[in-house]
Amino acid sequence: MSTKLEIHGLTKKYGNQKVFDNLDLSIEDNEFFVVLGPSGTGKSTLLKLIVGIEQPDAGQIILNGKDITGLPPNKRNIAMVFQNYALYPNMSVFDNIDFPLRMHKIHGIRKKVEEAAEKLNISDILKKNVTRISGGQKQRVALARAIVREPAIFLLDEPLSNLDARIRFSAREELKRIQKDLDNTFVFVTHDQSEAASMADRVAVLHDGKVEQIAPFADLYENPKTEWLGDFIGNYPMNFLPGNVTGEPEKIRIGFRSEWLVEDDSGVEVTVEAMEIAGDTYFLFCRTGGGDPLVFKTLKKRSPGDKLKLKVTRYNRYENGSLVA
Ligand SMILES: Nc1ncnc2c1ncn2[C@@H]1O[C@H](COP(=O)(O)OP(=O)(O)OP(=O)(O)O)[C@@H](O)[C@H]1O
Ligand SMILES: [Mg+2]
Image (tube, rainbow, N blue to C red; front, top):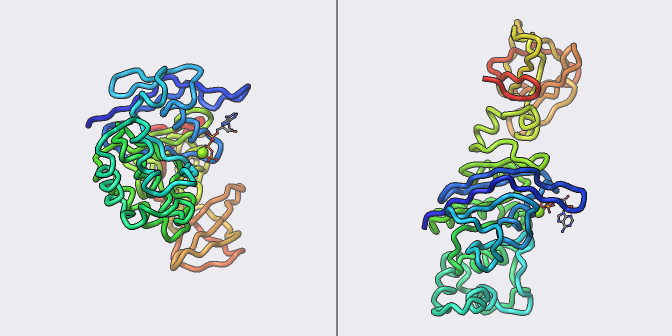
């Protein structure tokens, strides 16, 4: 089934606090779409507005060309997996998965539940009480409960954040596989960039009640549209220097990643202040004579106090905080 979700001018307030201010978003069919933002930016609120358990103050939510803004949740054909999974604690795995089907009086239930369980590799725990299963299994049960409804679109609220690091990696791959398998649209929200980097077809970054940029993760990393994004995306913030370093006009600031620097006598002199080791790679936290911080990625070990000359091999141009071509 083809699914397109469009959000126009979405505004949501809690008291005096504006969580969203005229937000626009368009999600394509069969996309693994990730919404990325720091804690408290409104990721859960966005999903609740889409699924219909919260109401916007203004704006429209359009699913496949139909305005669903005023519809109750059960008329929207959208399934949501909640941040805490929200399983019914006194029921078995089977009954949890089967619950939405019974609610909607859908027939052929057993087969649907068994098929979903098969997809998610939980067929052997269907009789268990959900209080007796692991976090990873709970996540699968919550997803199976969404799958049996055969929704037009899946909303997932940080479904991997409760898993321990080791399972989290395999769970990412598995989720991606399931999404391809189901041939359906996933809207996945997270504060974890590495999840966005490893799973997303496109990422929307939330900032100040709006979408700062929508792009594949690699584009966000290489060509962030604003200095704020350059700072936010990446394990280390993007470096920024006055444009005159590379002969740009005064109004320009140049932005570049730690790996776009090389040691070269024609470069800017910096002093190493601190260092971080990542396997065979070193991230050196340096400062220029002008007091600007620079992160430099290198294979050579250095010590605090060392002086280096760094040349910028590649950069983006920013004016008033925004990327210019
Ligand atoms: N029911 C509510 N009443 C009042 N304020 C709320 C309500 N729900 C959320 N908020 C506020 O709206 C903002 C966004 O909350 P939301 O839970 O959507 O953030 P989030 O991005 O999902 O955060 P996290 O990463 O911590 O899950 C927060 O400042 C929160 O305090
Ligand atoms: Mg949340």
